[in-house]
Amino acid sequence: MRCVSVSNLKPGDVLEESVLDNKGRPLLTKGNILTQRHIEYLRKYRIESVYLDEQNSPLREESSICRRPCEKAMGILHESAYLDLPYSSENVEILLTQRICDATIAILREMANNLIQVSIPQKRDYTRQVGQIVEEIIDELSQPHCRNSLSFLIQLKNYDFYTYTHSVNVMILSMVAGIPLGLNNNSLKSLGIGALFHDIGKMSVPIQILNKRKQLNAEEITQVKMHSLKGYYRMKEDGFLDQNGKAVILQHHEKVDGTGYPNKRKGKDIHEFAKIAAVADIYDALTSERPHRNHWAPSEALEYIYSIAGSHLEVDIVTKFARSIAPYPLGSFVQCSNGMKGYVVDNIINPHRPVLQVGKNRIDLNTKFNITITDIMF
Image (cartoon, rainbow, N blue to C red; front, side, top):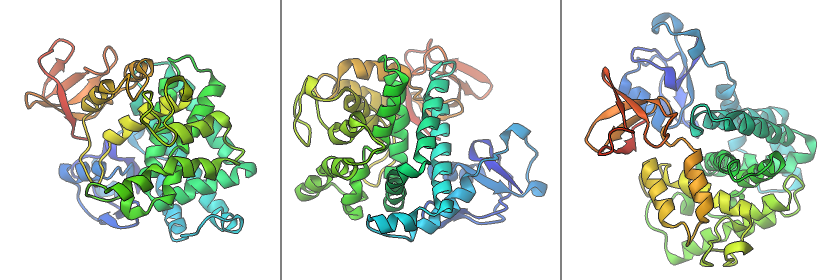
């Protein structure tokens, strides 16, 4: 039995163990012979790796083998999901068994490292810098003096897994955007920690509202808008976050024209880190699948973000954010405006117009200005 990354699965692979979603429900059962449709299904549910029957699966390169502890850690975290406990000092002790602490750290590390690899264009020197800062954050979270902060992350994971994964994504994207803005490592760390906890107040929003498939009514919107203030008060006395990080939690929904919430701050009255996190927050939310809408293509999300730069978002931050990320990661399968589909094989020169492998042909979108990418299939 071997653990293999979903990105390296092949039709004909045989599952050695059943694959579960984040709530412990089976997606595919042991013994299934995988088809391309199965593999796309696993990607849709953001499954990172699976266990294969080595004897009955096609041979693969050693480099494709996944040796990370994510699957085991997820199983341990399923245990904590049944501990539906309100916050108190006594409940922190129940939540933070060593096994659950270790599992939380393992999942956080893997999620962050995976995102670093796909969010930053090839040959960017940002990868090492962001990776080192993420390791510092995770190492600090592992320390005894940060047990309250870690318990909040565990509770958030148990409450709403999308918000948890979104928070990790926003942490990485915020730090990637912060580098070209000239932030030093200490500032990037502070920004990253604030972004990781930016939506912690959503644990105060009823889960049926967070996952509602229809448009929210006025009362529900009011409840959602309270999350930044409630998150700030929840983390206000927490020593893991400095004042800059806490400003991210409180102000990431403020808008430069003064129409945001909770305090209708304007322009320079909004903390720079909150402005950065706001861009990352919107981009990740738009490009993620949600109960009430389908995900947007990265190009659509960036166009929308540009459209609100100057009114809701800081123009310079939007510009540097767009230049710093890789909206079409290597290996992603995309669909174009002319119906063409292909794999991204090169995104060095222009991450927004990559080179595609379409059958036996390579198509450089830098030279095909009449063709645009309309969707990432997986």
